[in-house]
Image 1: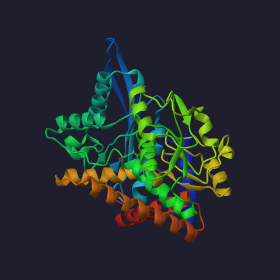
Image 2 (image 1 turned 90 degrees about the vertical axis):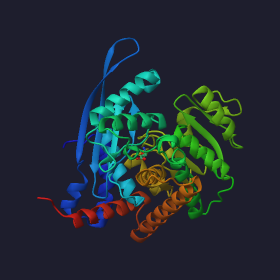
Image 3 (image 1 turned 120 degrees about the vertical axis):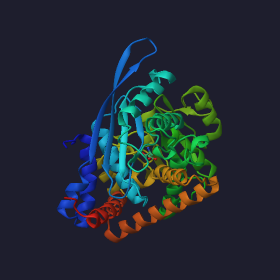
Image 4 (image 1 turned 30 degrees about the horizontal axis):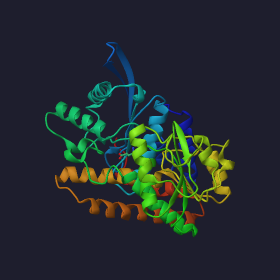
Length: 416
Ligand code: GLU
């Protein structure tokens, strides 16, 4: 399958560094660098103005050595097969780093949800799920929220799939509303994981967490919850940005007030108790921790030298281009790579899938404590691997992930 777009090539570069250090068998190398299945579907939707529009959707199953495919569904105008395939590969490594019994998958639809009504979004979601209904399932491939999709979207996924199979199947999708088989703590889980690894990273490099100055790019589910949990835990969130604007306040932003403002206004822009900040300036701020929590390709050779943070925590998937990452590493910046930093979301998704299959639900305290354990274990394993092999943390995280997937691939052997 030929999917060597620019993002997939960036993923391959990261993969190659780690695979070379591992001395990975060339045959296994070949298997792990090919998506298992790529599906493209056309989704006709009757729009509110009476016109029919046809949207293109993708679902990529990258690798299922460790278990069912797992990964979100993204709604965005820039979605492409290259992007979805790469995100599915990253899900494979992410689940393996967190030691979850899942493979990697991802979905996406090319659309601009900010210009669509709720009814149109529901119709699009349902048609997309109908088109991929035979390919997903609790034992096959389990979707979840991602950029511009949320618990309501997942409720529509669950309902549409259930109607197709003829019974209610909660475990087909995670990130659902708590009332219908969702897990307590899932919505906050990616941000919670980001908070945990930021705390561990600060301790590792010898920075005091109390008062730690943090700048966050993105104020969606991941950025906003990270800001909230970091500030509650004692860090000082001095800057946040979103697509419409940014804010800076040296003494730290009032995050609870900002969360209320963003909910009411649909953006952080215009929040009164802070100075406005051009979104691109978030990278060059004098802070201890920079958290890209938006989209891929944000830290590039063009802006990497402006970065002054001691720690970068990649809450987004793929925010740093490989060349920019090499600069950061050479300058001694402690980069917590995406496949480790944002693994909290899929970890809580795993807990949700387990709870759905048991029909027995955990308390929020149980979810939170197990999530912390998984994140701390993953962080420690990756840091130790980095020290043992004298490699950066991204290479170390890939080494942990690749060796787990490679071992099982070898054990399972070739079928025919
Ligand atoms: N979309 C999230 C991610 O990129 C969560 C995926 C999941 O829970 O399956 O990790």
